[in-house]
Length: 54
Image 1 (cartoon, helix red, strand yellow):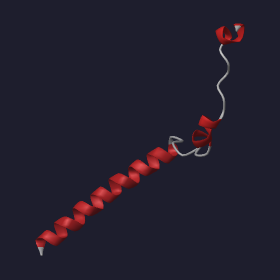
Image 2 (tube, one colour):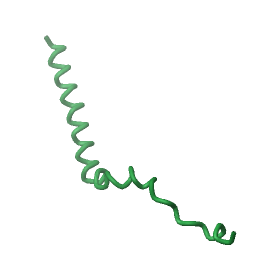
Image 3 (cartoon, one colour):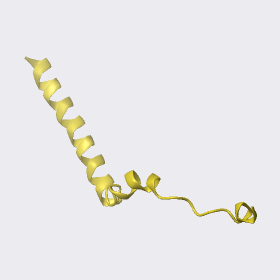
Image 4 (cartoon, one colour):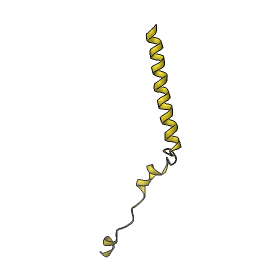
């Protein structure tokens, strides 16, 4: 029976650690822009100046 109490406490500690990491990541704007990285590859790069001399 003691092992169940230990496992519950350990699982709660792990859950609190993940919750704290999630809150930290949200507050540090990790999820602010989720759309533009996936479509950024579709835009052309600016042409280089040395390639315009052809």
